[in-house]
Every structure is written in structure tokens, then in C-alpha cells.
Length: 179
Image (spheres, one colour):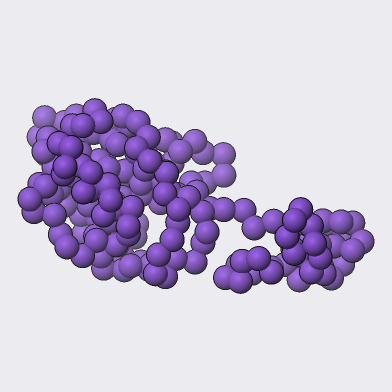
């Protein structure tokens, strides 16, 4: 139908009638000829953190595809019923075991790139760690490595365009430009 990487329902989840490809809401979509159920392909929403401590930024090495083995800003998908900031706090705790203060939304990016199978958006937030000593990172979940990087020591193998863009802006504008 309109998103070939998404799997369409074959049968209606309400009445079990075989769905048909029909024009619905200005697109061809799976539609039930019996009860008029329409399958919509809803976008996924992910959150990422430009998490800073002093003059450093947190990056994680991805342990899963897409971009397995490359460095990225920590984050992940929102769960149903979560606010973006709750999802971000949960992801940072799950991935590296730290708490942060979320300062604010930086930007919204399309979810695109090599190996990306979901269409959606990425909400990028600036977060700060207010510990006096550099926070200890505990790699968990889908993270194989994590580290605090100074602006002149950022790795070159960055996973996503959003990570590259946000890090370039962070470097150019200073360590606390959005704090």
C-alpha cells in the first residue's frame, strides 16, 4: 500500500473479513468491505538526548541495527501513554543508568537513514547531568559502549544525520548554549 516496509493486515481485526486495497482518506489503504475499518500506518515517535555534563556530551555505541556499532545520542521509541520527556528519562535510565534534568526541545527530525524500517519523527532534547563528578555509565539494553566526549574528541563514526547535526551545533555554539 502506501508504506511497503510496513506489513498490512490481511484480515480485519474487528470482523475478520479480508481487507481490500481502496482509496480512503486520499490514499490507497487496506479497508474492510464489511465494517469499513481502515488500516492507517501511524508514524513511530522516538526521543534522543543531547545530554551534557560540564564540557562533555554523552554518546552511546549502538548494539542493534540500524547502524549497529556506530556512535549515537542515547534515546529510543516512546511507549503508548508516555510523554516524550518521560520516555527520554526512561531511555537514559535503561541504556546507561543515569538521571538527567531535561532542559528543553532542540528540534524535530524525520526518521530516515540506512536500515531504518519505520517512518516517523525524532524529538531531540537537551538534557544536563548536574552531578558534581562525572556520572558513571552502565551500558545496558541495546548499548555496547557509552562515553562522555569533549567537543574536540568526538568520534567520526556517527550513526544518524540528527546526531551529526546536533553535535555540530553543540560544538559551534558552546557547551551550554541551550541550558
